[in-house]
Image (tube, rainbow, N blue to C red; front, side, top):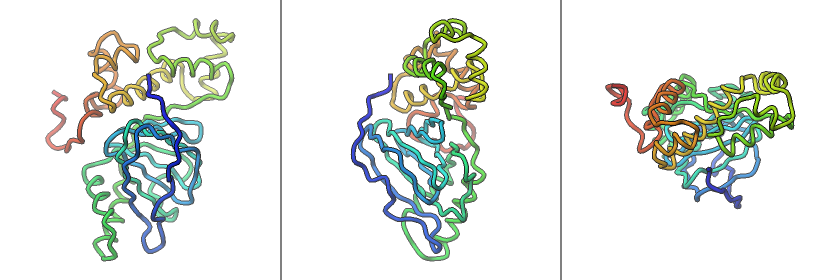
Length: 271
């Protein structure tokens, strides 16, 4: 089960907004454990990157899980709220609308390459020389070409579908099929299947797998043992869970635990 979060007063505004002369700025913060930042928006784009800990961000009807080595893009003026999963060592880039490297109408979770990580740290040291300007341009290009990672979980509005999804989010290991859920929420199986497609643009099975992946990443970044993670998201064995995880995300579950690894010479777990 996810840890309880506490809403506290927390400065969610940047200490330094982007400008025409400095369209990319970096803010470094160590956020107290399990802080919930209420809904807010800002006129610039934001790329949030946890060095340790993880983020849960909700925006435009989707919940996003952001573990270490990943970053979430939030477009300008998009309302969003944030929950810190554990204590988070956070890097946040604020990017002027005019140079936005990703879409202005939707969020995205992207891979953070070793080069991008190093550039972010370097940009945190504010300078006004040519090298700093070139690093800003390279940061924007690295974000633009970063591989996307699908960790978004669409959220429903229909009362019956919301009841089903809320119960699954409380217990991702619940293995009941759609016919059983139909009786539980007083709707036909056909109606629920149609609602999943119409509201969430996915199937019941795909949504549940995405939920399990999101919860698993959350748990792994907290240091929960993989065997326990597998059981808590409905898998009878760690091996079966790891195989599903690798098929879905292209990397083993262990990639989301411990310190970031330089990606040279391949992943030792790729065998």
